[in-house]
Image 1 (cartoon, rainbow, N blue to C red):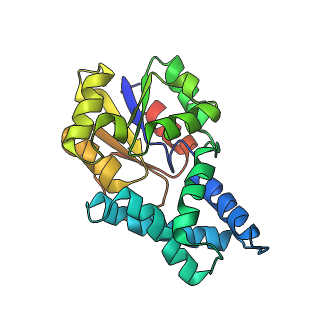
Image 2 (cartoon, rainbow, N blue to C red):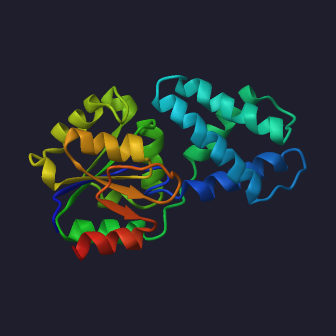
Length: 227
């Protein structure tokens, strides 16, 4: 194994966030007696993805994003409650969604057995994100966890990556890998700091500086162990 330390993003990476979000959106509309398909959940996800671009640029706050995504969704699919009322309910539901990405546990276990130190590195709220990972049964494979509210910065800032690198105990950037679904915040931010980047999934179509690209955990596992 080439890498001694690997950081994983949580949402859309270790955790199967799309499955969780689709289920929660169905439960939301069921509150008004309406049955919706996964297409509505997918529309929500695309709205959310677009808004995260603005958040990453510093153009909106996280709190504003939480409300805006439902303001936009409710213009397409009206709901009887306001976006302000739904936003905290949705966050609570997501905090209790424990859908792990297929193949994630197998990869983490194999990395642990290979002596690799594995950390999570999220832009989310530590208490919430770490709880989801733990309840998905993945925390036993981790050396530690980092989240934006604890670091005091967000990816892709150099401050974020400097903090997690120094606090991981690793000393060699060339043997440090960041795995995430976002080509800008996860991959390019890590690469510009000096780490190696791996782009996971197909949520984003933008170009990135990733050394590895994998649509599934099995594919990523194969690339890392057969290199």
